[in-house]
Image 1 (cartoon, rainbow, N blue to C red):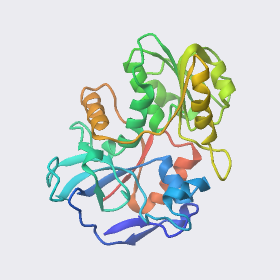
Image 2 (image 1 turned 120 degrees about the horizontal axis):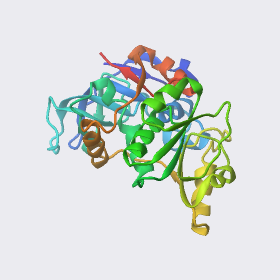
Image 3 (image 1 turned 120 degrees about the vertical axis):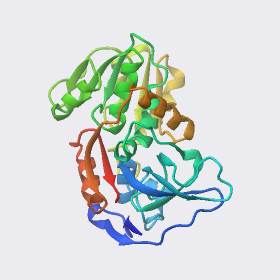
Image 4 (image 1 turned 90 degrees about the horizontal axis):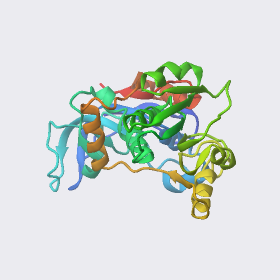
Length: 317
């Protein structure tokens, strides 16, 4: 089968379109014929091997998994002997390892039935970003003031919609190029971070792949407000931006403010909850651009540039 492979860490040119064997599902696995796969920062980290501490999981000298990709939407091709939740022909979406390929293996606990009102391309934009946003926003209360930093990206576009659906007043922070998108998702106010300072007081701040200090963010937070830092970009070559979410968790027990750093795992229950919201019309994926499988390197480059709106998706023939 065709797949995007890499044999070393580095920039997008280390990716190439190659041939690898079609995997055989084990007793507890599902083989999916991939129709589309999302692009997220986890892919960038796996490609570059940065920060260096991440190589403890990815592989010390070279990538342990040659094929990139986490989000997936497709059709079940076959299932292992112990799998009862899914059957050949089922349309599914979820998370797996190595989704930039024509086929991929997945665990049933990371899959769910695809939303009926979404195409495969749209469904592939949901799993990792949607689940992260769902866990980040949590039980927002009507009337709360929410600040979403990075509202124009994959996680941010879902977080904005979920907060609006909860009755919150949402202020979205993004570049001017993404302002129309976040307004269309329901944000009542938009701040262009390249031109305007952050002001105001908020009950919930969601900082997605940002680099502002905890001191600055806490200054914008209400006395009993909640701050959630999603991801860890920037920072040192060894530890990247992991210092901020770690510091948030260490400080939180000693303040009335709730500070946390989040890395969400994709689970069937969360995918089912997102499907219900999507089929009800409450939330929709904001697909910014699509790419062919051979253009995966370009897709990751566009993601890293920070200029692409919404979620980027790779389609697989």
